[in-house]
Amino acid sequence: MAKVILHPIGRPVEQIGDEKVYRENTERMEVLNATLLERRNEVRMGWGQKYVERVHAKGKLTTWERIEILKDPDSEIFPINTFVNYGLTFGDPPRTSPSAGVITACVRVHGRLTVVIANDNTVASGSWWPLTPEKIERAQEIALRLKLPVIYLVDCSGLFLPEQSKTFPGKLGAGYIFKMNSLLSASGVPQIAGVLGDCIAGGGYMPIISDKLFMTEQAYMVIAGAALIKGAKSQKITSLTIGGPDVHVHLSNCADERVPNDPALVARIRQEIAKLPSSGADYYRHAFSPADPRFPPQEINGLLPTDHRVVYDAREVIARLVDSSLFWELMPHTGEEMITGVARINGLYAGIIMNNQHLTPHPEKRDRSRPGGILYREGIAKISQFSRACNSDGIPIVWLQDISGFDIGLEAEKHGLLGFGSNLLYTNSTNTVPMITVLLRKASGAGYYAMTGRPYEPFVQLSTPLTRLAVMEGRTLAIGTYRTRLDDNFHIIAKNAPERAQTEEGMREVEARIEKDMDPYKSARQMDTDEIVAAHELRAYLATLVEMSYQGIGYRRVKNPRIWSMHDLQVLTDFPG
Image 1: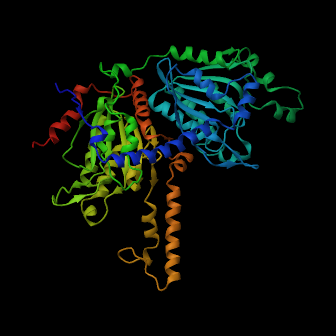
Image 2 (image 1 turned 90 degrees about the vertical axis):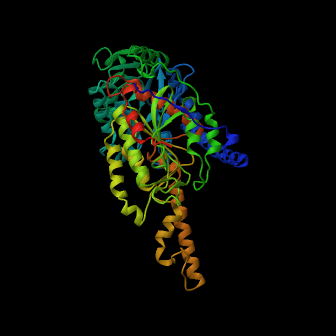
Image 3 (image 1 turned 135 degrees about the vertical axis):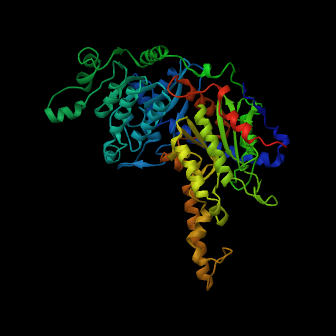
């Protein structure tokens, strides 16, 4: 019976290229990583120390403090959608909503990976802002697709009313959260909620639909708060008397238990998670233990050129992401602009698809080479077939994008790239296996779609500080915009100096605007990508995400690796010599 045999890949950085270039790349990346860390810390502080102290004065923990005591000791928190609404203001006077006022993260509890959704009580008492519902729903979607337990830490004063038109009525507005609650429940996904303070109006349905619901002595759940009722009915009451634990634990039965304070509530949630089935990940490791890459992931910072036009060795990046730097490359002799293969990440099998940046031989004209980072017919067919095989075998797919787009021109049209591309899009649209997409640098045009960009529903899409997500580069778009004023070599045609200056200025403005649009923080702000991750953090994120794909048992096909269709692919495409 066939066995999966992985082969060593990668070399020490001293053997890869120019030491000066590696050092310069590292230095430039360190600047970008420092900015990333600074902005993360800014978001994590919410509205600042004043509001942290206000929470503590009420005898409560901040939301991050709650998550810290929820997670297993020495485990790492993996936030998702940190930068939603970053840099935006709402209302008058203008107010920020760091991380859209809600923290969503993958958190390990009693060895099980969970999805945590927690209102940030340092930001307008946990109010829902524009994109807050969509952010909550995105986390619920991850949990639903992977059958992961969901933990809600509710401390929410309802919609931020000055912007209610952006959060209340739409298809994915606040009401869709409760539909997702219901779909999770119908699918048997455990949902455990803790109410640790305010829980007003629609926000009350989120914990109510959960399987278990705990309330602290300071918590209340109400359809309308005391202020509104006083105005409507002239009653002198408080929200706690209307909907505190006295009412909902002992009279309405809308809550299961009351606990004295935040730490006690978090402890009860941990106890409930411990009752759930353990993770299936260790079973699917097939007696293999997780192993670090032979080369440090930190080295990716020096291997990735910050200039997107400069090439690098993609296999060296893979070698710093996968266990023991072992990789089974499939179909290496065809579609060489694409790299496809299988590796273990965190001891678990994953398919890897990555753009090769180097020049590759033209398959029909061996005296010619073709630039990398572009999809040609052979590469499209290769990754389409590999993607299908992963889906058939139940192997999660990691897409490592650094793509300029599809080949264009007469040869591309004669080769039927539209048809091959449609085939690939169909494949990735109908896959049921978990897919993870990483935008390393370029994510351009339809190539971004073809390699399972966000519209093709990877369960998580990560970007790096280098990511440039757009239809085309700024310079290219400027040329297209001013094409009628350029000759065949893209030089400006002008009757006089002022006309030339006007065209030059216009092209510069177009290029600058597109460059600004390609900022990864803008993509993250509007939820076009899920998280910005430093290059050296990719290994840890992928290890967690791949494990999440294997934790649940029985909800999808996971074939014994001895009977993979991958073995047939290897036999049929392994050309001698």
